[in-house]
Image (cartoon, rainbow, N blue to C red; front, side, top):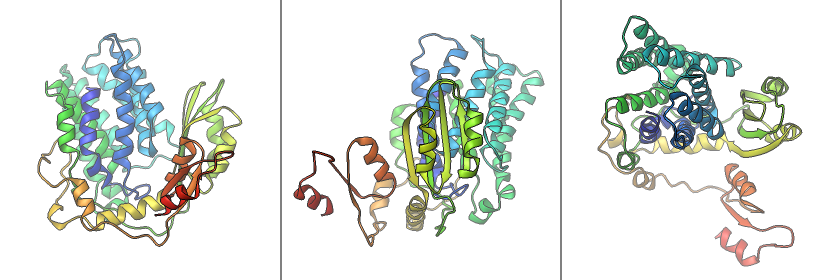
Length: 381
């Protein structure tokens, strides 16, 4: 189920990216959820036993370690709650699975400081509620329970534009909610004996986004999406969360005493890193300029060929036709920038941070190993 959900999400990630207008229209929700759930799937694949809790627990840990973006961190907390709901079980029946989904939703709501309805939270909650009611009615078939949950989830997803004005203005449903349901459709496919395969992912991955609500915003109060893992001893997520409350928005601090995932939109990433390093070592540091991401996503959305535009149907709709995305991107979407930036950096980690901040070319070098003039000239060219 987890493997199939991961592969279906990878198929649909570009379409989900195109729906991403909240909390920032930067076109990366599908990509972030895909990276998060792929990490969950890879971790689950390493489990040698056949206990449903062991598999769910491994997927939970993998999703936390690989969580990307606001939606990815929330997804990791849903997985954490599901694992908690299945604790001690080698096998799970329909009612236990539905209960685990509800526990997952509760964990996600607790992780978000200011839960916003009309998002993945709403869709996952209604999905879990639909599944639980079906199981409570006496249905013992997990497949039927998940289908009932997805039906309620789809109804909630269709209502998200009425809950979030920004979605209605853009003419799209919530990207995170669509991503969550996509995962569950992958679960259903596996239970039906139709597990999504790698070949299908490679075929479907090249599709042009069917619809986009992404527009250029011009400015953001907190432009830098900053996220990283903190490892240490005796870490307290609640204390860390309180200390960062006034440093930005979309704050998520989740984890254990040994490892904590921090996600925040802020004006100054350095202040966040400086605070965190006092309590532990920093890993997987990611800093993204969301304003730059928004400009690129809005430009690409504006330049999608008219022939590719169609209403997004979600779910398991057929998307087997269409031109490769790389070809579409190269056909009229190249934009000449006013300025190009070349930076010199020592190490892959620093280079990745420069790239995430908009640097065009990174030349490796540093103290006692200065790059040559020709290296710099080539980067400029």
